[in-house]
Image (cartoon, rainbow, N blue to C red; front, side, top):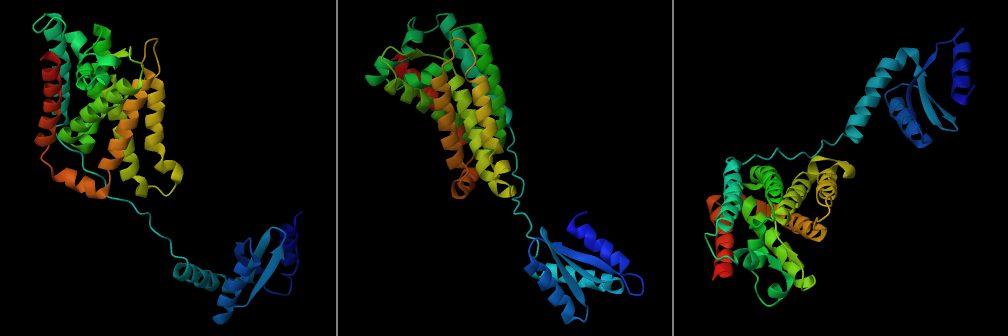
Length: 310
């Protein structure tokens, strides 16, 4: 039998010939119990504080239980009000996210059709792939043209499907034009960094860098805009953690997977998504007509291919 049970038994034994006492409050610190006893004493309710090794308990006579409970609840509300969670209103989803997906599909399929049917220069693939030595010599456009080139049908299909999925979600979250502009910028910058710091013989093609840019951008944007909605630090970091998990799951599988390109794409996406989520920048981006950054994204790709084929 522990101390609290022994005391309860003693109280029960003392009920013969006297009014029983009832517990109305317990705490780890004796000071907390004594404060509540003082509050009750101020309104004419006698209380008894009993200390134990694991805390203390405040007892009052059975006839005073209801009044004592009401007074203690009032004391708690006045001195320790519950702070409501700071929840931001749910963000609106942008419409017409499918438009960017159509543009993405047309670019990838169009470039594949034009090159496979010899409708442009026969060396267009070689002039558009990411190649370390020419990039270091100043051919910056390869960082963007390589995003539209693929080695095979399955390679194209995989990046097409993944890009459509992540691009659609990013378009809903940031706006179709803003999302695809940032995806194109981030994917190209990631390729440019890899071309400049990688070995001179490094070669790469594919839209997967841009796909992981979209993933990182969504993860960081959600993490930053929703951080005030969750009091727990663990829940606040869930979006970014989920993005990292997807990066590890999708971005490292396969024999010829370019892990560094995926990591750089994801990193640039996180940076761009975080910056776009700043309240001052976020408000400005919401006021921008979505066709404007959308056209800018198309111009970046068109200018890059114009340099490549010149």
